[in-house]
Structures are given as structure tokens and as C-alpha cells.
Length: 209
Image 1 (cartoon, helix red, strand yellow):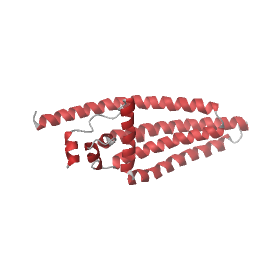
Image 2: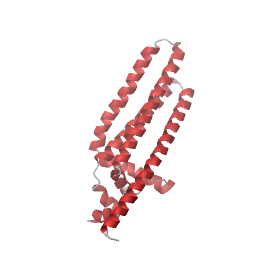
Image 3: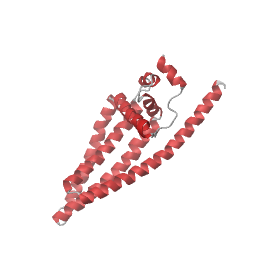
Image 4: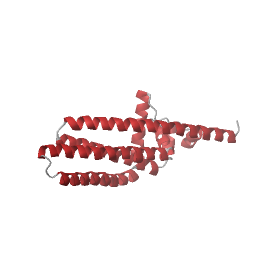
């Protein structure tokens, strides 16, 4: 098989793999949305106001963490992970996959998960306000709504602003940490959520040079 045929075959496999991953991303996004909504609904109804606020903080934190991952993947360099992948060190292969599919990973982390957390945090905030107004018999509902909305917005925007700096300055560490987590999922649970186009023979040759 000549070089052009190999390139065409690799490109075709690459496109097929990305298309398959997009379908998986939709399924994962739907699953996450249902899961977060269900957990937040159940917990917010059964716990007190302070515990509800803690759950809200966790939801916001998840959105910020995924935003950091999305930014880190787009700003990280692939080169440092070639040798790691070539030496078959855990996480090396996954790190290269993450960076080579940075557009998909970033879209999923920043947009899909970010939007889900934004919607759920808003719904959680409304549930908390309702819970508080039951205790106060409807007094100061408008003030509470404005204050909590402001707090949610400040924590979300501020957290992502701080996270952006962390993601850019520590992109290699962030990417490799995520890669190790994905490697653990694949090794112990046989779950591989990334497209399969990340590594080829050319990558391994570059890593050994």
C-alpha cells in the first residue's frame, strides 16, 4: 500500500472515529444532564438550606473544572507526550488523543458540560430560594433571588476566569492528569470515550527520535 493510500485510509478512519465519538458525546451529555438533574432534585428536596448551598457549589465547581480541562487541551503542546506514549507510560496515549481531538474535547467540556452545569445551577438556585421563602413565608423573595443569582454568576464567571489562567500555565499537568484518569477507566472498566485516531506508527517514531 503506497503512502497516499495509507493517508486516505487514516483520514477515513479518523473521520469515522470522530463521527462515532460525537454520537457518544450526545449520549454522555444526555446521561450527565439526567444524572445531575436527578441527584440535585432528590438532594435539594431532602436536605436543609446549608446542604443545598453546598450542592450548588459542587455543581458550579464541576462546570469550572471542565472549563479548565477544555482550555488546557486546546493550549497544550502534543510534543511532550510523544516520548511518553512511545515508551508506553500510562496516560501517554490518552494525552495525545486528547490534544489531537482538542476541538471535540473542548466543545464537550466548555459547551456541553458547561451549559448543563449552568442550567442546573440556575434550577438549583431557584429551588433554594423556594426553600428559604417557605421558612420566611414569602418575605424578601425578590431580594433573595437577586442575591443568589448574583452569587451564582460571580462564582461561575470568577471561577472560570481564575481557571483559565491555571489551565494555560499548567496545561501539560492538567492534560496528563485527565489522561491518567481516562487510562484508569480504560484499564479497569474497559471504557474508552475518546476517538481512536490519536496514535499511529508515525507518532511512535517521533517519540523515539
